[in-house]
Image (cartoon, rainbow, N blue to C red):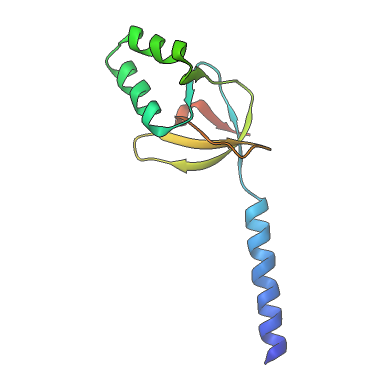
Length: 106
């Protein structure tokens, strides 16, 4: 019985480690805005939906929003029903928000 339990534990540990290391990598596309918080991303979406270029430029010039760096390899961390995503660049511990269209599978 102990041998079966040990074997099952090893299989579960291997399965968990394989799924954690097999996380899908995405690549960022240029021409999209990125922010460090969802609240600021919501402000960006509001400005774009109202066609308020001055508000969008204000967010970009203040530094709380920026244009995304194209070609950056990232992990998808969270996705919302509204099309927003939170991602973490490969090798980083910081996460950022953008729209789903700004990422493509590697």
